[in-house]
Amino acid sequence: MIRQQKMTVVAQKQIATNIFELTLQGELVQEMTPGQFVHVKVSDSYEPLLRRPISIANIDKDKQEFTMIYRAEGRGTQILSTNREGQLVDVLGPIGNGFPVEEAQPGQTALLVGGGIGVPPLHELSKQLKARGVNVIHVLGFQSEDVCFYEEQFSALGDTHYATVDGTKGTKGFVTTVFDDVAPQFDVFYSCGPLPMLRALEQYYPDKKGFMSFEERMACGIGACFACVCDTTEGQDKAYVKVCSDGPVFPKGVVAL
Ligand SMILES: Cc1cc2nc3c(=O)[nH]c(=O)nc-3n(C[C@H](O)[C@H](O)[C@H](O)COP(=O)(O)OP(=O)(O)OC[C@H]3O[C@@H](n4cnc5c(N)ncnc54)[C@H](O)[C@@H]3O)c2cc1C
Ligand code: FES
Image (cartoon, rainbow, N blue to C red):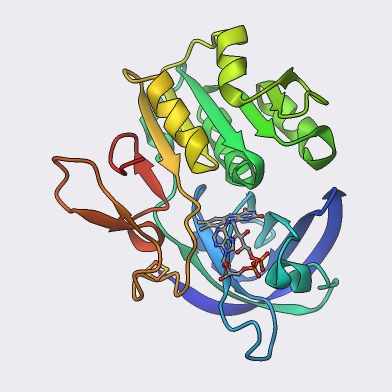
């Protein structure tokens, strides 16, 4: 159930250039699953009015804490980055349908593919897959080394390969360059990132079972405003889906890319 709660800042730190890790505490955490997101009101005033959707990167139900990792880019996320320990943040969530962890069976291998600010939700997903006995391979794409994060955390969970556009970390190029070089063997893929990356992934592995999380621009975040609508492919039950309430995760082939 989606709820609104003022959650307490446990920690906020910068972990890469313009990239922040924010840990919040509150009861909402009990209902979170990997791939879901929260809709954050970044200020008490009416400016900026719209909440910002941010993925859930780490869940700790024992401590009632979750972590998000975000790029402080525009006005809203820059305000969010000024929050300090003990302050309260207005959070709506958890929202959407997350990654179906049960689609990878124990003993199978899952390929997790992320690009830029699409990488954070893959961390909690990877943790839960590993806990289930699934082997995990990560292929992570960034612009450059200075915006990479969670290298140690991903390496501790499984093989991790990097692609950077400028070649400062891992393979020079895109995640597909890593597919060419490494040719990972896997049973199911999970991914989150920019549309060109999702499109390339779908074309690269047409016969594989896969799930994709979309980061469409949003307004209400709860299925009421149509800001996040995407067309579906031919033959689907609906002509369009709302990424916030029907997604953000969809099986490969549902959303027209
Ligand atoms: C389901 C989902 C999960 C996301 N998870 C993360 C995450 O874990 N980490 C992270 O850094 N970013 C994530 N994003 C993208 C993040 O929401 C935007 O970067 C952020 O809203 C931009 O706000 P701003 O204040 O920096 O920019 P502004 O330019 O001030 O934003 C203006 C408006 O545009 C919207 N907007 C701008 N860029 C985007 C975008 N790329 N996607 C959606 N809305 C946008 C904002 O919500 C806001 O309404 C996610 C987006 C979605 C939809
Ligand atoms: S953001 Fe309003 S319907 Fe999805």
